[in-house]
Structure formats: structure tokens, C-alpha cells
Length: 232
Image 1 (cartoon, rainbow, N blue to C red):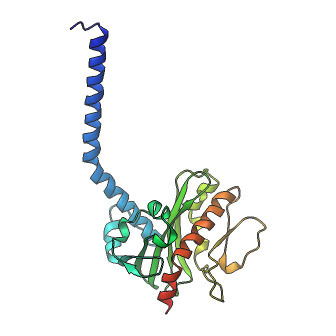
Image 2: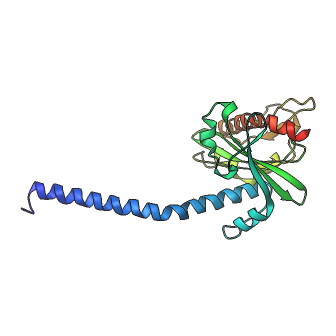
Image 3: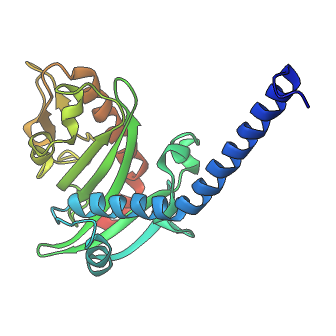
């Protein structure tokens, strides 16, 4: 075959593309278990962080096993259903009708008693936002929260993943005195809101803050029946 001809060039290029694709596919398959383990450990770190428990990549799994008493899934009616809470994909659940969503719950042992950790998922300005909120056993008072984002603006909306923004959520209330679900109001400058439900928003990050507010309202509403059952 003429090595200078177009036919040879086409065959050679095609063979190289197939070879490289095969190598990449095999490499991806081999790396997938390790990548998934990294994702799982980071998730456990975030769950623990929502109740103020620090962990590293090396010790997160052992601390999680010690502190998380149990995890389970509830439905919109607050009833426990089959399945593994840790395996739930929040993005997929959000795409379902509200009544069909599976809602994970993690019960965590702390020095101040059992806390109920709930994952949350919503939309910011430029992409998805998510996190974990820990609720006291009164099923009303927040104990802690952590949030993360995919693509919010550095120095503005991206500040939702800082302790400065997250720490004020501790002690805030989900329900008002009459039992109405108010959730948490991420207030912009000058916005009036009941102090027990209000946290200060981020200057220049109003849309991200209001997206987070909407996320919490939506997800707390989904867990409302669960809250009420636990109060009984």
C-alpha cells in the first residue's frame, strides 16, 4: 500500500482513533471504582460537616460509621420506604412529581443528642446548588448547614460554601409559632423578615441567595409530613 496515499492516511488515522478510544475506555473503567470511592468519601465529609464534625479523607469513613446511627428513605407522606439513602440521586428525584420523590434522612449522634440530616438540591444563578441541613429533634430548629455549588460567581454567589454564610443558619426555625412552614429567608439588604427565620444574604449574590431560599422551602415542604410524624 502506498504510504503516501490518501487511503493509507485514512486507514492509519482511523486505526489510531479506535486504539486511543479503546485505551481511554479501559482506563476509565479501571479508574471508576476509585473515583466513586472519592465521591462517596467527600459526600460523607459533607454530611458530617453539617453537624460540625470535622473529618479528613483518611478518617471520614470511620467517623461516619461511628456517628451516623442509621439512614433511610421516606416518601412525601413521611413514611419510611425501602432503599438506600446514600444511593439517592437528588437531581433525579427533583425531576419527579413531588409526591413521587424519595427523601433521604441521616440520623447522627452528637454530644447534643440526635440530629436529623437532610440533603437539599436546587438552582443558583449559573447552575445547581446543593447541601445538607441538620435539624434538632424538635424537628424545627436548624442545628447546622453546609452548601456547595457548581458554577456560582467567585466572591459573590459562590460564598454560599463559606462558614461565614453557613454558620448563621444554626438556631433558625423552619416553622412559625402557629405551625406554618415558613422555612428560611435569605434576606437581601433592607428586606424585613422574622429574625427566627432570617439569615443575611450575600452582597452582590442576591439571585444565588434567593435560589437557595427557594431550594430550602421546596425541600422542607417535601419533608413536612416526616417532620410532623417525628413530632408526635
